[in-house]
Image 1 (spheres, one colour):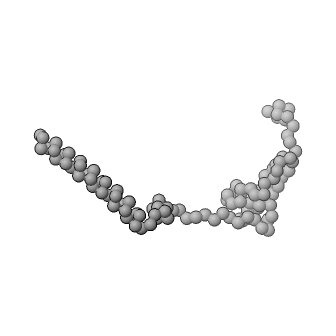
Image 2 (cartoon, one colour):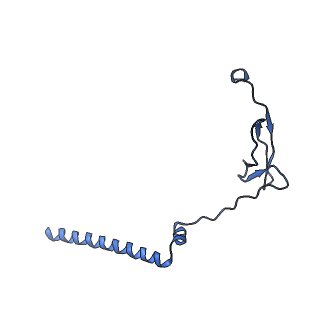
Image 3 (cartoon, one colour):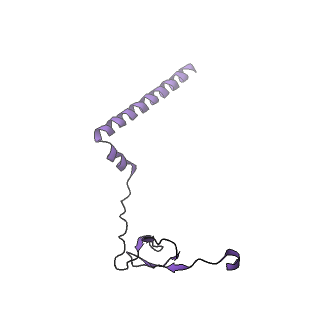
Length: 109
């Protein structure tokens, strides 16, 4: 499948982009296409810009947070204690109900 089947290729321009790790990537764009200000570096994933002397800063990554860390951001210590006490009371009530049911069934036999 060559140019005869697909038609003539659009005129292209190649634009170099540079990331903070000094990688260079040179994608090509159609002449009529808008060239973006930034491009993702395929080698390291950092954003790359058109100025080799002043590439975009790498994105700031936040450390992994556990579920507990997110909960502590939303709840105070007192709220957490109330929720925990409520959940424990519910579990203890369910356990007592199951034990009473098992005891009643054991006595019936």
